[in-house]
Image (cartoon, rainbow, N blue to C red; front, top):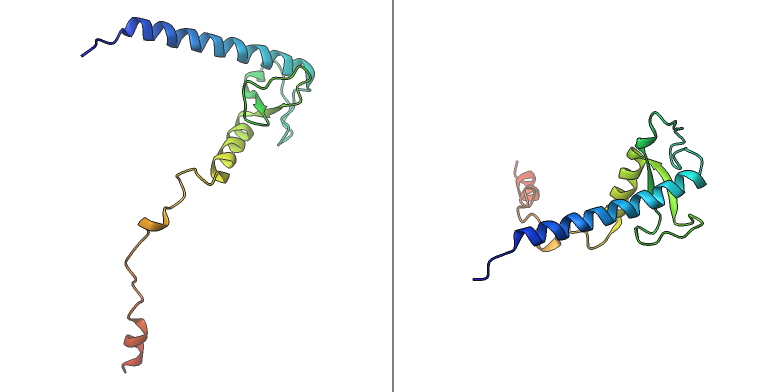
Length: 120
């Protein structure tokens, strides 16, 4: 069995995280310069003191799509951003969270009700 080079995996993971953080910082800074510091959903206003609670949401959910004009972004507070992503997950037909019809309940507690009610 081939031994896994965990040091190499750690370097690759750390590099990917750094790249993602740099990318995020880049579009976040641009979005904060382009748009007023207000949540696009609930209207909550932000100042420098609580600006960390204002996030950049990608409307098409593609974090690689960062046009210079910011047309794929909207500023959302943490709560509205979480809500937006939860709604998107629930709207997906292949989510897996929806109940599988083939494994539904098989017990029918009222199957005999008519017969029981007919007997006095």
